[in-house]
Image 1 (cartoon, rainbow, N blue to C red):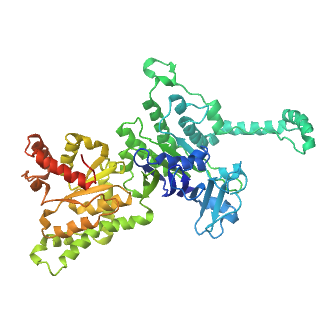
Image 2: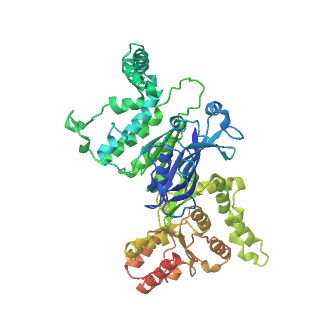
Length: 573
């Protein structure tokens, strides 16, 4: 079993959201955007936390229902064991389940889970009884962002440590001969206890005599011990600081960094533990686990974040397992750049959270948009009104272009190369200013850190597009993920093919472009009356030097600030 889609309706700041889910999914966005609301909606579906009236949105709703709907892709065995009534008209081996929290279909002490079959919602609860229907959706392991030491590492109640121990114990305890014998012993104990002279019968008989007038009786039995109960009550742990001898210390002795690292190590080694599947009777009972991890980067230095990202992805790739994280770390976003669909950005406007995600069906459109540059250049070359002597550079670009299939693959590679940890910060910024290269980026970052420090409240990120030829690609990405942005580029005096390229950039303005692009007259250097060295790698240093020695005047800086703010629709002063 794997989740393929999640729909959320009327839950906290989310009025309506639809998310495509993969083996690994990262939820990103600014603080208070609604990432935790997505996580908690999923937890409510799995009854890992309880829905309350406070979870109903305060604004934006059009009805009084609240629900989460999850689509599952089933394995061959799961499909074969699924009840026939849930297969009617289903083309793929899948099941769609909707759990209501509020509305006319909510019944007290019931699962309130309904299957959607052939586009229609079933009238009866999914597999009937509450405990049965809930169990057939798999289970959740939830690791919160920040907790106290006792909450994070306790085994007597829900905690990240106990959740991970349970997750791993379920995979390995079945291989233990002693555990098998323990199960047989509990079965024998149950059989003995229920005999006419058994200890449970000794208790139940007088109770049932008293209840006979009600036509009700109590049924007592002994359940076998589960892996969860082993980790809760039987497994004990202690932490020994080897530098101080063999004495075990209280957990308070160790910091949050150590605790987070322990959870990280459990996640790292978890994929190495494999189930030994038993052949069971034919019934629909998926052994699916969804790991929900909030801010896995907390208290980890960058190298550990890199490793955590790798092992979380590896864990999600295992059968019957998936991983969804919420993160503020560009490291986790950059590690998903080869699969852009795995990035789900959440943004809140006027109290309502919206979801922005590149769906699988939208990948081809994004790739195709990257090829629009070549289409524009070809149109320029084919324009009979333009003299041939002005087309030489454009013709070279066409001649050096790759075949369609290879070009499409290269478009995918571009995003992998671009979305390093630095540029991936655009998913968390309130506003992004898109510039051509390292020189512009160095200039604006310096000014924002010094003379323009008062603009810090705008949370602006400067992103260089690695050249004008890539602007349209970044702008398509901004549109897909709902990233508000401004644009500043060199118009290169509209010379030759630059006229067509400039127009392509102007035409890429979308609903998230905050203002018309600002165009430097010829280029940034000319705009500032500078003559920088010819080597591009030296220009960032030279422009910072020009700032320091006042070659760039205060009047020019004021003019530049005005253009910068106008590009981002910032009301200055």
